[in-house]
Image 1 (cartoon, helix red, strand yellow):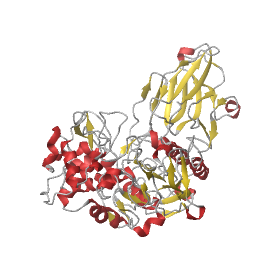
Image 2: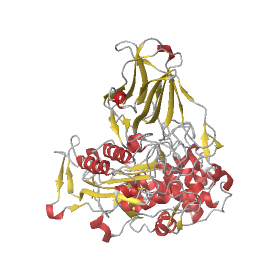
Image 3: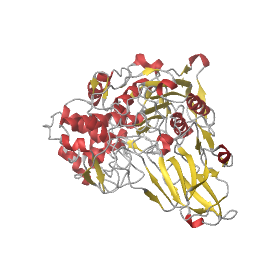
Image 4: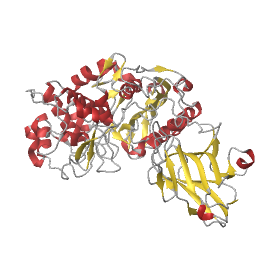
Amino acid sequence: MTGDTQGYGRTSENTPRTARSGIPRRRLGGGILALGGALALTPIPLAGAAARSDSGTGVPGSAADTGAGMEPGAHRPTLRRGSAARAGLLQEPLDQLVRDAEAYLADSPEHPWYAGAVLLAGRGGTVALHRPIGKAVRYAAYDEKTDTGVEFPADQQIAMAEDTVFDLASISKLFTSLLAVQQIERGGLELEAAVASYLPDFAGGGKQDITVRQLLTHTSGFRSWIPLYKEPTREGKLRMLWDEVPASTPGSAYLYSDLNLISLQLILERITGRTLDVLLREEITAPLGMHRTRYNPPASWKPKIAATEDARLPWSGLERGLVWGEVHDENAFGFGGVAGHAGVFSCAWDLAVLARTLLNGGVYGRSRILSEESVDLLFTDFNTAFPGDEHGLGFELYQHWYMGAMATPRSAGHTGFTGTSLVLDPTTDTFLIVLGNSVHPVRSWRSGSAPRVATANQLARAVPVRPERGRTAWFSGMASASTATLTLPALRLGSARARLECALWWDTEPSSDGLFLEASAGREDWQPVPFTTVRPGPGHRPAPLPHPAGSVTGFSGRVWHRLEADLSAWRGTSLRLRWRYTTDRLYVGRGAYVDALRVRDGDRTAFDSERPQDAGRIRATGWVLSAD
């Protein structure tokens, strides 16, 4: 299995296709966005363009070894181990990240989420955390009658190690996507070309209009999966694919499907004349020195590979017993272990090299595998017509369900059904790899992505947010299913020019969580206070952005904004003001910060949080003063 939401499961023609014109370089450089199914040019920032010394992210340029804010030709970091401080991260959240991950080695709630995992987190060129937990091999079998795992004897169990190799499952799709983008860059593949122009038999079943872009963004109309492994021959498997009828009109809906990347594999093999495993080795892993990443690992690797499932009917599609050292996914197994949707094995450090390469704009050390413009396509949302299903070319974007508080409109990543995940956040130049063997001993023992979310939340918290002024700012925290209030003392305002001023920083799960400015002239009759915000930047002062509902939600760029609110409507009353931060029970963002609170009553300053006597009158419930 490769996806986290589907059931089990997921060449070549020998005549190379003549190279096509590809996307012109000027269109790559401008960026490409899908708007209602049509492509439009728009300028977009490069993947590594986070501000190196932005007050909102708190990255001191002299302390954090980051690749953010790089100009063309600037140094792109390679990986080395280092302290949290060296990475520009906070140590305590990284320690909590490990504790949170270890909690899922116990029943959560009925069974462990995984037998073990390898955790890797870093920022810039520094890997600040690389920690194995639990067991790589624990169970010999699964007893379905008692719903228990049959453990190997203690001396035959194998502990996780930093270099344990995992079946990546659907993270394999990223490698196939990178190979496709390489061909687009080189002119051998056209993004908007019909798949059938490369694979004529693909047109069967009404698929003649499906494009390469729709394969990469899961908008082709393919259903999620079909049991290709039931056909004993490769020809039979391909016939099933050729005859498959789309479940929806191509381009009309988002539906995650393994068939998209299998089809892309067939295109790549046709136009290059090389099999996918050879392409992976020659175009990605060898240039980047990813020596523990490949299809079909040799038998000598087995003691260093995490075991997966006791694969038997009816929960598995095939009777295989304990799968260990071979691909778990049935369809990939049916293709001999080499498939576009699954089959790649790798370790955490190798994936960190890949992450660093992409955050560097396609280069690692002396090796470049993609241009900066091509990398930008991986971080650009082509699915603007399908809100909630943001997708670059192969990479998922802005998905709180496993990225947690690391999610931003440019955060890219993927998960794998075996328990793996990779998240890159160009905004903060951070990366997180969580490799678990969560189908060991059986796939039914885990659901959801709780460990992924918990660890991502802690890495997001490890990126400091420096106060706008002074040493501390008010922080809402990052708790789910909670409400936190920050209330000013009652103030009597007499001016028609009364206003609130403060600095505001927010990042919440869009729509679900929000920050509200409210006023009360009585006891509990809180009403919204409209306000405006301005995001500081170089050049002329931007126009204030109105918030007529008195609230903010979603992504604000992770920088401080200047806020003003007209309080004249409460002239002559005893006014109380408060910030209310509310979250639902699922996911959270990085939270909210408020600093430099000041209420002006005409020419008089009625309240100033920088005055100790005023600061001491603030009533905080859930909010805390934070230096970071």
